[in-house]
Length: 153
Image (cartoon, rainbow, N blue to C red; front, side, top):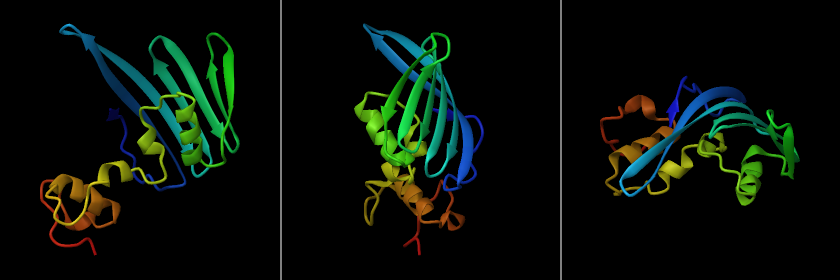
């Protein structure tokens, strides 16, 4: 996945970004690469709009408190899914309905959490622990190429 514009603060109330997602499929030594472009607008904690472009279909996802709608503008078809009020809870319900959102972790309330599950003292994972420290707001004392020294306090 490649973010086209940097996200300044994922904890901000509102933000938008464009993501180009690639997926490789293949059998018998043949590889097919699919690309999907997503334009995402988020208003935390309750509103989300994702404009998916790829696989030959255009699909829009609109999510507001209590309701998510998938809409295909070309066919003028839509599906309505009852979802909880927050984006994080709505993403869980959409996952149960087999709605695949490759950029999902960027939409979570704590986007760093999936990358830092294995972080901890003595893990020996310098880059993972750097992310863990980044999550704790101490990135100013670290560079991505250096292992953290001591705690993030």
